[in-house]
Image 1 (cartoon, rainbow, N blue to C red):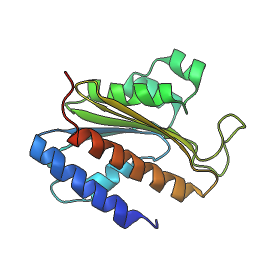
Image 2: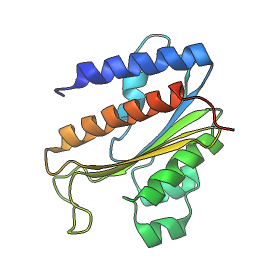
Image 3: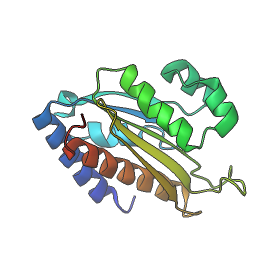
Length: 169
């Protein structure tokens, strides 16, 4: 995990800002398998702001635990902006959090297709007021661990951006 120091620094910054602003965080992770939640909870005092994490690796888990619409998965697939959007939204709805993220992708080495290659990741961060960010990563076949860590780093950057952005009216 070459950028784990950077990830931990971003996690620390996010926790500090959310603590100051009294914002709770929820995560909905697929390809990262709980790595984002693990990074956040690695830090002392994370229970002040980390509300919960959903690890929804399978489509059934996305439907049962988060409430993703089966039609979204059928029409767009698990690795899509639409699914990541629903994951973030449902994580907010099914928690006390004011800030949530949905991460879904193909970490590899297998599982990719021409349309959805290994290294494709969709991340959506959403805030209680509706402010939403989407990022599509095209990381390529850089290795499973690298795809997962890069996804966590990007998710933390997006959450930080939302945590510090002014409220929308």
